[in-house]
Image (cartoon, rainbow, N blue to C red; front, side, top):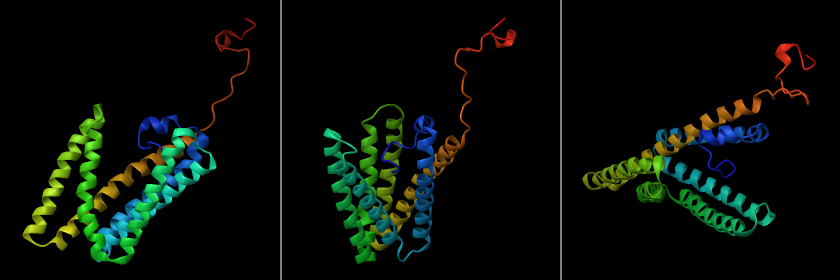
Length: 220
């Protein structure tokens, strides 16, 4: 997302230069609006919501993977980072293409993929956060609890009603997650735009530290 950095922290926005902010904030804004729009449409369009979500995710992964591969081939990154970018890019393109293929092939198959994939992705993300410390670990505990509740809800819905209904619930949960991830992007875009449009600081005249200006100037 947005240049592949860890983008959603206040520190990242605060360290951005005006030039980087001007280049980045429109992409964050477009991506955030797109994510929220896809989530809302997926919930409203019940017949094709799963296909829309899976197709959008597949498209994002395929494009992101292609960007990583292009960076590795162009020499923008080198050494160990180039190998890692190449591996991640290849995997993202493959998974993205598979998601696009499933979304185009069948609505029921796309719903089944979300039914299985949503709990797995939530649990895997929670496990990844739990191995870290501090705030990330606390977030991982909260996400783990949420993941267990969602998984239980899907299983109970599938057994008590039918698995098609459970797949619909998984689609709603996935749409909610996409919308939640889109909101910080919108906030970050607003903050970056403020950095991009901030006036440049006034240049300091060489030879003057400002210490004697209040007393009538350096000559005094």
